[in-house]
Length: 376
Image (cartoon, rainbow, N blue to C red; front, side):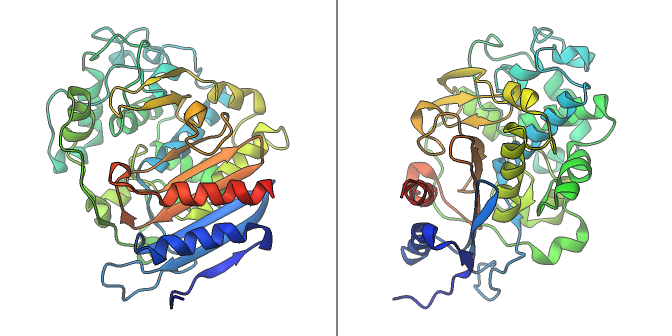
């Protein structure tokens, strides 16, 4: 038995999810975490437990939020879809149509869909920048726009771990005259009442959990990983600073809880089924979710299927057994996804970051329990 208190509630049919969530804590894998599941639009799991600080003096509460790293990319992809729905952007159009400065050094024909499916060849910077320089979005965006692709655009994917956030900022500033975060907060999060922020308002600072990191990064890195993940010197502690949360970089700077992440995918599934058009129509979302490339990603060095901003579950079962499930994982463990086949919308947030190559099984445990629950 354990003295850990799991708060919230879950449908009895999804008790396996609660058991998996508890087991992750019992095995010493968690500090604080939350999981939320919608099934056919109904909330069936909404649980949280643990501590939101390293000293374990502050309990994780119902309204605790935390940086979710690349899980943010799913929200950014929803923003792109909303611009396509409004006729302000076209997935098949060259990025240079909207952003002429981008169309240099062999990048003139790269489409919006290719950019957001990590095929531009500019997975990062050719030269490193400092922590402080990363906060100068305009300068870094200009640096990236002038880069020469590391491979022929449109032929391979190389995960734009950080760079896609700056590319998105450059595009949105030219198309709508505001940041991706401003657009997301105003046009998606607030109308849908999502606890998901891309650029955290100061009044919510008291709710934020502290990130810690346990585990080791890979020993050796290839040239693509260096460009994407080293030349942008991101470390786990940056989101513990106000300026990172305030910037809300759309590739890695979202602050949310599991409920907010799951709620985003609940809305996307509703739109995809034609029941609503909160974010985009079913026709636009089908374009957003079309597989743009399936290959061994040059940065992540694993087989991946990329759509326009979303990762697809594909044949590797990234988000469970159904190939058309779509979403995104975040560094250290967070994730969110939607499954059109089963009507599942899932969000998971936590503050103890672990590495998959070190054997982090928390997400796999929870996802397995969710699908076991649905199949019963």
